[in-house]
Each structure stands twice: as C-alpha cells, then as structure tokens.
Length: 187
Image 1 (cartoon, rainbow, N blue to C red):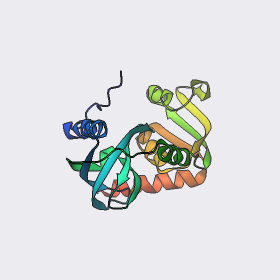
Image 2 (tube, helix red, strand yellow; image 1 turned 45 degrees about the vertical axis):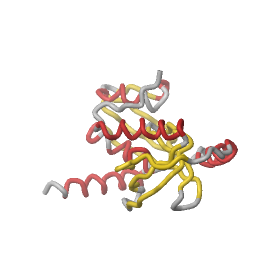
Image 3 (cartoon, rainbow, N blue to C red; image 1 turned 90 degrees about the vertical axis):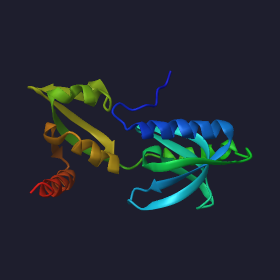
C-alpha cells in the first residue's frame, strides 16, 4: 500500500494529489496555477498522464497546453487546481520513457566530507548506505560523492547546527553564505 499523504502537510496538498490521480484515471484535464523553481507563476492546463515519485517528491507528467509539449510539474507547487474537460487518450508510453531516461541522467557528483551530530543518525540512514556512516566519538562522519544539485544545498541546510561541512571548501562557503543571509532575516 502506498499512502501519498504527507505528515503535517496542509490538507489541500493531499487533495491535489488525489485530484491528479482522478484526472489520470478519467482522462480529464486539470487547470492550476503553477510556481516554477524561479518563483514565477503561470496558469496551466494539462492533460495529466503519470504521477511519478522521485527524490522524495511527487511529480505530475502530462501534456501542457500552454507550452504545447509534455512537461513535468512538482505537485507541491500547484495551487487552485480544478478538473476541466475530457481529453481523448492518445498517449504513447515511449514519450514518457524517453523523458524518464533523460531525467534520470545523473548530475555531476561532488566529493564531500561531512560530520553530523549522532542525534540525526536516523535521518542519514534514509539517504546514505549504513556502511559509509562512520561513528567518530559521538558524531557521524560521511565521506562520499553526492549529486551536485539544489537538493544538496537544501538537504545540508535542513540539518542546521547538526552538520559540519569539512570539504569541499566551495560547499562550506556556499552553505555559510546561505546561513548568514538567513540570520539577517532575524536581525
């Protein structure tokens, strides 16, 4: 059994997921406001074709009438979703497979050396194989390669003071700058 509901998520978020599922099963278009990663918003009408769980998030893949092309939408960036018209099923599975193959092409990797507080060990197990989690005193040391994506930065920032970046220096500086910017919000 898969339960897509998120703990602590607003009910609307889980309702949007259920709506997307309904639209796929009934061949119904959906209209919604979408916020892209640059915080720009657009009204989209989409013929939804697949729900895809990847990287701890749900995505909707379908034909976007605004862009006149297949597109991938992060479900959590959708608001004001409304079911609209029926669309005839003319989807080719090969289109999704071609997209998926391109999407799973790995990002360049970054060699990292991280030290975490032991209290976050359970969180690390969800990301790293147990064999690379080395206990050093009362801390957890990780030396590995991680895809260099925006996810890496938000992942590390989510640990707050429970992580120390030993290497690379460029990553230390980027995270430090983000933290300093955050502190200014409270001054």
